[in-house]
Image (cartoon, rainbow, N blue to C red; front, side, top):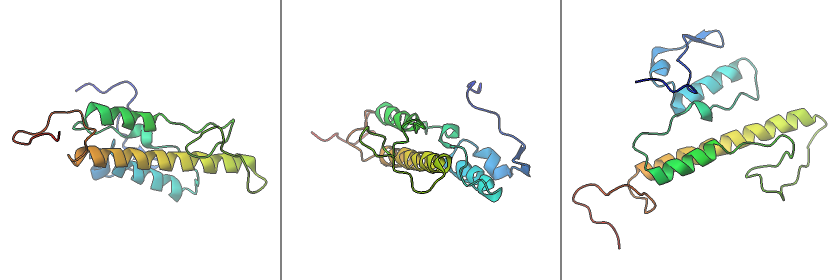
Length: 146
């Protein structure tokens, strides 16, 4: 299988730490994303880079849920407006503290965490097989609800 150009190869080391074989095998999953985030936290980086772009959508996900999943993946924090999640224009930018750069990073991380949570929820709903929004054929022997 050819790796798409936007996906990186799995490194041998990440932030100076050898990547365990188990993490290397699941590099493009939420488990590995959590491991990478914890490596940033170990270096006292309280505002780690967003990891949701390194996670691949499950192959079994239906096209409709995949589209929603990609929509949340591509939903980004706007550092100019500073709007809180979900970023509608009425969100007030009321900084708490004097450091606006820190407030902006806190809000970016908030966006990253909430968008990632929505992506995982969409995966769970779709892969459960009980979602009426799925647009893939029902498994053999099951009738679709009318």
